[in-house]
Image (cartoon, rainbow, N blue to C red; front, side, top):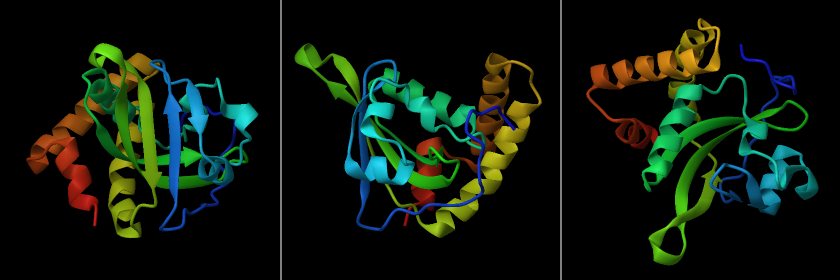
Length: 176
């Protein structure tokens, strides 16, 4: 398990089906905007998260390999969908189906990122958890973050190749 300043409680928070978590960040993942749902579900105040890296929400059971894939897509100017488990301020966790997109400015230049997250289906999470556990276990076998990400990414790539699909296809297969 990866180190975290906030210790997970094992208690799950759930979004209502009609709710959307919205946040914006700069090119480095530093939070520049959050909506009220973000604040309620995460337990943070606006002052506590604005100007902080989005990784403040990173749950230790969320594979780094998935974030690497997400950042790669964004840096290529593409959107990314992913199932993500986040860590609330008090250590509770909450699952989201995330849609992250580049924000384009003048001259079609990426100036930041916008993320909408909604409640995932319980069935999708039930199918994601075993895969994420395997990825985290592989990452945990390596001493440094760089090696861990490479190993997790290699396992994710092998897993997807053996299923004959891309990560995007995997996510959409799980989405009702």
